[in-house]
Image 1 (cartoon, rainbow, N blue to C red):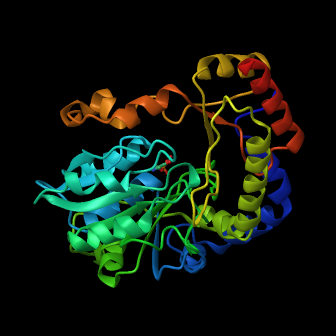
Image 2 (cartoon, rainbow, N blue to C red; image 1 turned 90 degrees about the vertical axis):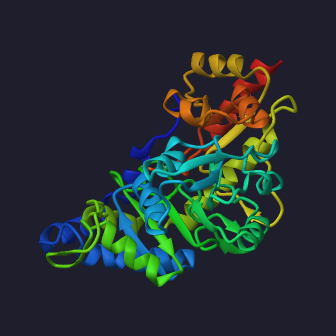
Length: 362
Ligand SMILES: Cc1ncc(COP(=O)(O)O)c(C=O)c1O
């Protein structure tokens, strides 16, 4: 049996070191907004290369709070993609704004920068870009558009911890960036968690206020906020795991290379675009015989997934925002398949997966 993801292998490796750090945190008496969070915020913002960081409850909250802190709400439009995890778009709608969809590029499945300008209206306030599967979007072009049209550039980097665009880490390339630390992410906690990063001090102050019941200081509530704080246990785990992130991303890239070299020509493998470092949060192939391949993998005890089978604008909850025609976004889900890829996956397991796919594609 080859699982899509097996986190017990990671835990076995980290167990001793992790138990020691957790013991320290547990005995400290601080469980929310304590020294472990401060330390992780400092470590992660340094790693990404952005000045300010605020730990929150999840990637979804990070996105929601990022938009709220920029004052995005009723009558505003935010440009984004429909080929993403639902939370990207939910953050827009939950703030009362309207998601405006842009189609994706056929090769990278990332936002097509050539299609953005035609979607800008006087109501557009921001562009919410997703570095999907671990590959950075075309940030120079997107930044240029945002500057020209006076739009905020927000990065959903939930799948791209450590990915780079022209040598800079994603999460440092826009006005505000959002990360998820869901356990299966390249950097994941052992529960929910997220982070908002920004280079703007005033945005940072708003996020800090909004994540803590709108409290400016003890018992002074200046905004209607929520309770969304990364807890001390998760912060401890994440600080420890951050030390390994680069080496784990290296392993992902090595395994991706093996897939790439072994998979048959009938299967399209992910392409790393020029000037970008893909960190393969997901290894997504595309093949016309996708269903057959998935069935064959299943018969051989190998799990695979589809990220994502239904684009957001076709989800029932998005009926009011369904109007766009997005040919690539609608075509891509018919052929994509995510294969197991995580740092603890063994090379012989990748070889076995390739063998089964090869057999199914003949
Ligand atoms: C692209 C993207 N955005 C947002 C999220 C939401 O993150 P979380 O699950 O931590 O709320 C995820 C994670 O699942 C994601 O992959």
